[in-house]
Length: 196
Image 1 (cartoon, rainbow, N blue to C red):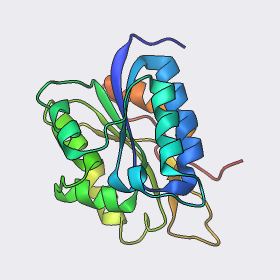
Image 2: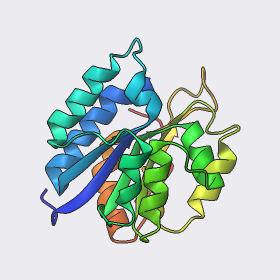
Image 3: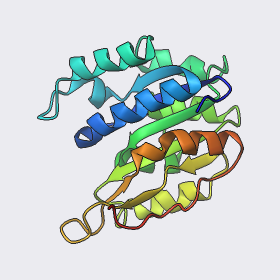
Image 4: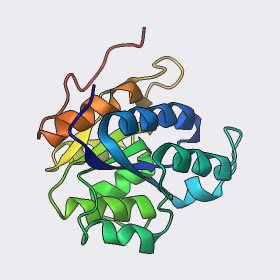
C-alpha cells in the first residue's frame, strides 16, 4: 500500500530484545511512507548486547533509511524548530522513556526528539515494550493515553504467566498506526488478545 509520502522519524530505545522485530517495522514504514529518519537513544547507540553490536544496528538503520542516524541532543533539537517530521515513532518505547515523556523530561536524544516534534502539534506514535507496563509504568501509559497528539501502537501481554506485568506492542501494526495517527485517529483495538 502506498501512502502519500511523508517524513517519519523512527526512534529506537533500549529494549534490545525487540530490535530485530523493530527493524522489520522500520523497513515497513520506509516502504509505505518514503522518507524515514532513524533516531537512537544513547544506550542504543553505545551498548553491545547479546542481541547484537550497537554499530551493526546503527549501520542497518542507515542502510534501510539511506540517512545518517540522529544520535545526540544537538542533532535531535532542530527536529522541532525546522519542522522536519510529519510523524515520529518510538519503537521500541521502554518504560524509562515512557516515564520521561509522561513527566515532560527531555534529557535523551529520543525524548528531546519527541519534545521538539510535539511542539508542532504533530503525531507521536509509541510502540511500548516494557516488563513493568502493568506495574510502575502503568501510570506513565495512562498519562500519555490522555495526552494530545500521542498515539499507541496496539499492544498485548507478551507472556502473562511468566511476566504478568509485561506489555509489547504488535510492531507489525506500526505502519497502520502511523497512517491512523496522521489522520488524528488512534488505531483500534488498542489492547490486543493473546498472540496466535
